[in-house]
Length: 202
Image (cartoon, rainbow, N blue to C red; front, side):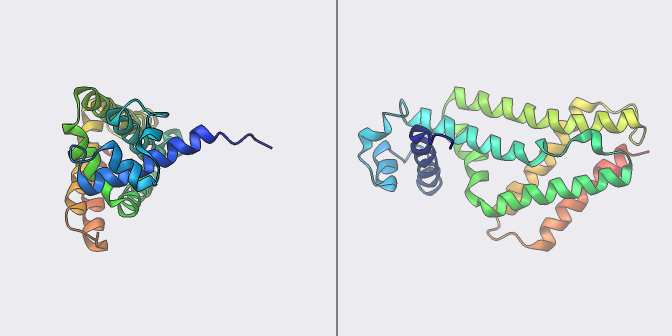
């Protein structure tokens, strides 16, 4: 049997508790004691696993980035062979992204609002994440160019960041309205997909 790592379990519990506290109170209005209270432990326990509140927030951010990355990393771009298949993949990625947002409504607020005001090191980590997400999108564009169903003159780096900016703007707008309604979600998905397919497709 695989050995259970109790340290990893406790760190996971602290990260989850911190995310809830940050979402409810805001990072700057939250304390280590608040996180400990949420977890029902002494606040000294937190310092066994993390250096300080900033260290915890950085790990919360890394967890969010990992969860967003998983939306696309198990969908290999090279498996897409036509414009129709690309359109289907865009629908699948969009559905996954919005489902993640619906299941975790505070995630967007932390990533795009709270985290940007925490610390320069956290801001650098967010900027690096945006470039990482852009690289995933760029792989799809390059695959389409290589296989001939996307135009060959696409500025793939800039286009990938623009595409992702639309997706993040959609999530910002949708998350700000409370419960996400299907009509609005579909309108955003269709708009982004048409921008890509009609703009870049042959």
